[in-house]
Image 1 (tube, rainbow, N blue to C red):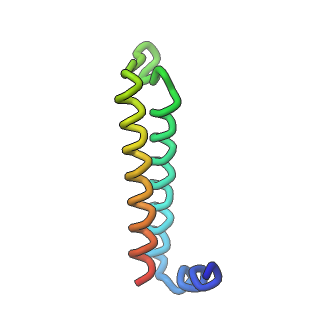
Image 2: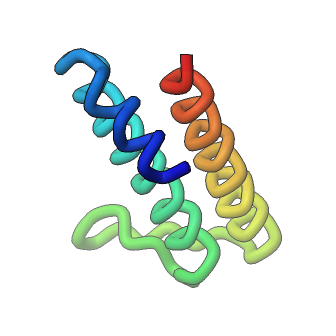
Length: 82
């Protein structure tokens, strides 16, 4: 299956491969932002500004970002299988 996916990836045009890589970077960014929101108690916004959010809202938003990142991840692979 991995060999088939790699073969399909190499058959794609340069534009499609570029968009795939950008999509994967966006997936990783959303996933990391979700983890940051979950595990950091105080979010440093600027040098002197610290954002303090209640833990329930912080964890909820982090989980929402992680779920959204996986939705994007599966959409990337479903679009590339065509």
